[in-house]
Image (cartoon, rainbow, N blue to C red; front, side):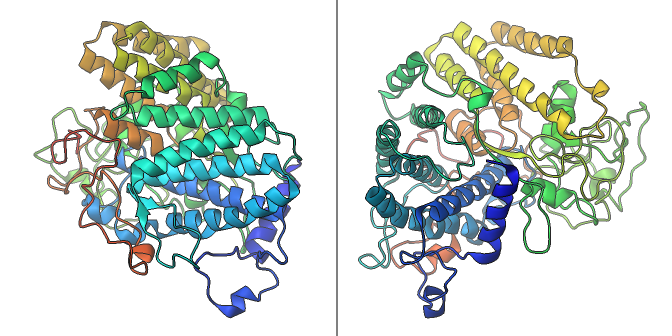
Amino acid sequence: MKKINKIQILLLLFLGFSFISCETTDLDLLNDPNEITIENGNLERFMVAIQVDYANFSEDMGRNGGRLVRLEQMGSPSYANAFDPASTNEEWGLAYQGMFSDIKIAEGLAIELEANKHLGVMKIIQASTLMTLVDYFGDVPFSEASNLTEFPNPSADDDASVYAAALVMLDEAIAYLNQDGLGLENDYFYANDFDKWIKLANTLKMNAYVNTRLVDANAASNFNAIVNSGNYITSTDEDFQFTWDVVNNADIDSRHPAYGADYTSAGASRYRSNWLMDEMLYDNDPRRRYYFFRQNDCTPSGIGVDGDVCPAEPDTLFCSTDSRPSHYPGSMVFCWVDAGYWGRDHGFGGGIPPDSFSRTVVGVYPAAGNFDDDRFSSIGLELGGQGAGITPIMLASWSQFMISEMNLVSGNVGGANAAMQLGMEISIAKVMSFGSKDPEGDLSYAPTSGDVSTYISNTADAFANASNDGRWEIFSLQHLKAHYGNGSDGYNMYRRTGYPHSLQFNIEENPGNFVRSFFYPADEANTNSSIQQKSNVDGQVFWDNNPPSPGFPSAN
């Protein structure tokens, strides 16, 4: 399908359509001729709506997880305040009022039309969404959801049972995809390559088995059975990702959301994570120039690219004249990162100084911004790849990190190291391929093949010679860095393992307990009498049987 067709469909979706909501009771909306209803809707329009909602859901949830594990910057010193009940209203609505409501009606249309491929795709999307909801919230509505006639206030199902139901859905999806049926008119992920959809379903199952390995004795054998089959995502041409378009006007912005937030006429609106930038700078990670674009060559109080100490600027970087927090170890990054990397610490939520043209912004991966070639120029509109980036959802490199973790758990150090190396190779190659998205980028600044090989071999050697604790530290750092752009799996990994221990501490010494599961969204808890709001964020999802917080994870 040509890109212009996708853009036209997105324009129609955002400008003309208001998708049916399972909570809609307004008669004017029910009679709106542009509303998708059983009477005037059709299967393909539902499929477009479902896919676009899923992309936005994955992007938003991934950023939530990323902020917790320092892939993104968390701008509140209190965990409970950073993720208060109102913060996930949109994501919950995309799932329940968007996807699940549309899927319920679309499934009926697909069954009538014997559209087996459509059914398979919908079941994969629904299963993936349900597992993500459980990972973040624990118990969630399922059996009574999307049936407001009988259950106007749907109860939350046990989270383990929802996970189990999602795994059944994935098997059902594979069965449907193996049957004859017409392709989707618009498949934004795999262009009707249903072998890839089947590989995705198996990879999602692998991911579920990794998450449940602490509570399910059969998880490892189920995981290994899929790995041994080879029928899972193994190469980047099978990567499951949503590609954003270069469309930005008063009515629609379908560019990558991070690009839209940073590349504006008023400058950047987000901050990058000091921890991640510092880690990648001093680890000499080959992906650094692709993940971040520096507007300055000197961060106040840090060491500039010329080797000189940069003057403090408390008006633009508040903390540049502050002392290190007493609970921060001497080796932990605080306030500034050298070489012009300008971000914020984990949990810092101070005011907004005039620094929008000083901050480091998102780079060419995954958001299709600028490649960092030491130009140190201000960002603005239509630069770099103009936002035609991706939201990664399940990548080949991530498959290898799953295999590495399961091998590390079983004591197969060599297998864990080999899979980690392969995951790094795949990740770095994919990230570096994005350099060409910036037509102004000078790729002579890109790392050489020798640089990449040295980085991977040094990491592998360190892993081989480390203690068991050291191996988990190295693995978890590489896992997180490969998941930049979608922090959901990183958030899960951190709760499963407690690593890495070297994550930057919250800037507040007593920020409250780490978020083991999120509050229910305010829109749901305040209107659904069957959902009782949680008293805190300490509740652990069913697959997290690690010690309670505080104390775990250690880098709170």
